[in-house]
Length: 336
Image (cartoon, rainbow, N blue to C red):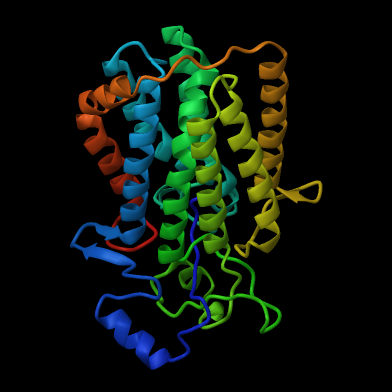
């Protein structure tokens, strides 16, 4: 999820050096703040999200055009733009729903509550799925074919998003219990992990962001390989494989995640239950496509490149929207 927290692979023990880095605008994993103005702040997290969005959009738009899934190029641009608008909003709504007790208990005023900058990846994924479903239904386009296209691009976007988490200091792991475990450290007080848990300064934390980067990259390479070398594959298979692999990854890595408090239901975190739903959906899609699904059509590389050329505007606009949405704060980091 695109929450907040972070640290370093076992270096940085000199707090004086860390203080000097902070004064020069640096951070434990690159600059946390890219620009500090009188009324707003831009953080590095948004830059990583913007780059990930661009690379994902290139893959998705090329796939949609190459397999002629969406008949009109302007519709492809519309879909990409809708996703770019819906993803951050739904991610924000998810975190506000889960954090509502801080307002109801009086810990935060309503204004503080709604001005909190926080995004949940599962909220963004849910919003994206709803948008794809609505788009497919409205335009009479096979939804599984659309999901295949996004299954190719989304893991790459998630990998860059987790690099942003590493930089910003969110989604970190628990404190390491032995010196033999891989660990990262945070010293920059502007990172989310230290804004919320200053006692973790300099402590070795499980590098869950880096684990996610590696696994998401492996998922991307797997989906890419299947899309290139599995001719005649069933429509929906790429989406099913992505959902299954990502669900397993997120379910497993939750055991090492360190943000608190965590929301539990029947012994599992809410994010693990989302992961289970992805794995169940993956299995259902696989059964469906093997029992009576359709195979992908013949690929047309020229159509794919044509779609990219026709979508240059949204290829610029969508990453900018996502980058600003996830990277813009008010004068104070963590609040609008």
